[in-house]
Each structure stands twice: as structure tokens, then as C-alpha cells.
Length: 147
Image (cartoon, rainbow, N blue to C red; front, side):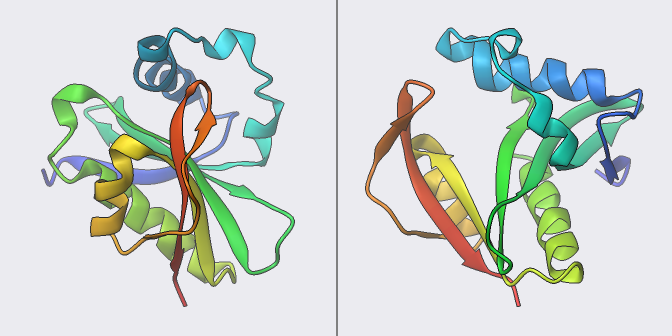
């Protein structure tokens, strides 16, 4: 696992296409959707974190600024299935939390698929909403104080 590198990129990085492909494969195709049908212009506003193994993106997560000086939104968490359960998601969230803290945020919010609630709870997030539907599947709002 020491050969996994977590780093920050933006949409102009040549490796961004791999992030797109990962999100498509893990977050959209399984629910019958495609990123091709979505407006991705907001990706330019995201801070993107990738987990990389031998030059291949194996996981990603994004931080998106919202209209709140204290909170930032964690979104688009994805890890290829063969890498799930190996701590990659935790490394990505840790990097995002550290960065958010460094740039002055005190809290992170996210819309978690209900299937991922346990993952986020294990990382210290707490549920702040009842279940709702987003992209056709059940989600909840979760939050974590990071100060």
C-alpha cells in the first residue's frame, strides 16, 4: 500500500480523463446514467484528490465550495471495486479534510448514498437529514466538524 500516492489535481491535468472514467464506471453506469448527460462545468470549481497506483487513478474525491464560509462539500467519491476495502477511500477523505482545514473550513458536508453511510460514520461523519432521492437512488446528508 506504500505505492499508493494521494495527490491533488485539477481538470487541466492530463490524468483528469482517468478521473472521469472512474466516476463513469463506479458512480453512473451501475445506476443506468452517464456523465455525458450531465453538466460538468462545475468540475472546474472542484479541488480533486486522486489515489494513484503505478500511474493509474484508482480512486477520487472532490471538494466543492458552497455558499457557506464555514462548510465545503465532499462529492464524487469513487474507488474501483478491486481497491475497495483497502483504505483508499479513507486516504482520500483524510487528504480532503486536511486540505479543507488548511484553507479555513471548519466543517465538511456530503450527500452519501445510503449504502455508504457506514463508511462515512466510521470516519466521524454524522447524519443530518432524512433519506432523499438523488440521481434516482437514496441518499442522506452527512457532516463532520474538522477544526
